[in-house]
Image: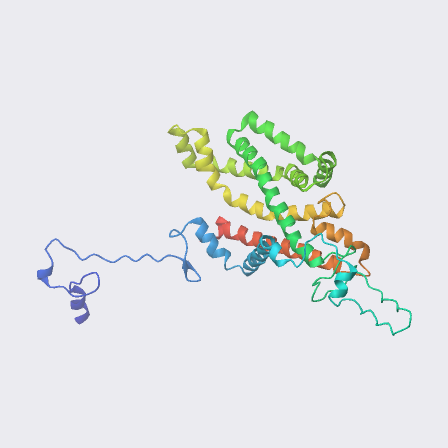
Length: 355
């Protein structure tokens, strides 16, 4: 009975009892509605956040992806501050006199009085082992391997990023136009894409370098002209899916120009798979440049390309394996970092994981 009487007591939304004088006859205490939003590790996700914030919350909980991000930041800093970090210029060849002054060669014996001078011990700047002066040793021309690996970071990251930008500039417009307009425009552009698919990619890159010559710019051009068809096909498939959505039909019904529909309604909604594709394309471009340099048709001498360093060091693999180990390790770390980051980004941007 007491519980029923307690239920009849008028209370405010905070649960405090109210007097009859505090309420009009028409007033009814409002119930407090509490919306419970889903969380991931204590962070609110879902409607309260945008797609990109939700993606960031998921990405930072992927340990391999976070590790990949830190490795990539490390190599980016190496590329930016290579002039400060590298001990010597990448193309500088040391002399015997310099390394004797650093104590890296046996000292010249002192000749006793009235005797013929003793021969100086054999000393060479080539293939110096790792030391406090040459952290990674020297190569077959007496150049500091550590400095060349550091400066090689600039070459590799520049090739990966700039080539993907070129691929995006070619593949994105073709995919957008083919997917949105369809009909004969789609047929024509996709047949051109199929023709490019028919060429072996590495062989086509070799042909481009053979025609235009060996230079860093031509390597970027060869990679960009070779690997844009997958980007065009990806963008086209996404546009074919998005252009049938209700908001696109509504924009078309009110007379919005096609250009505005493409850039304001379609393009922002297909960026997720495009970004993931770029993330996976960067390490592939770096590996392609390293492979072309390994064949001797990539980065021109004396620029310090990791692939070129591996190619030069393979002849001395038995006598001095460090010439291959250090640049090979740099290539492996960058490739693993980009792949781990790409995997994490793909999972973070996957709409099926948004619950």
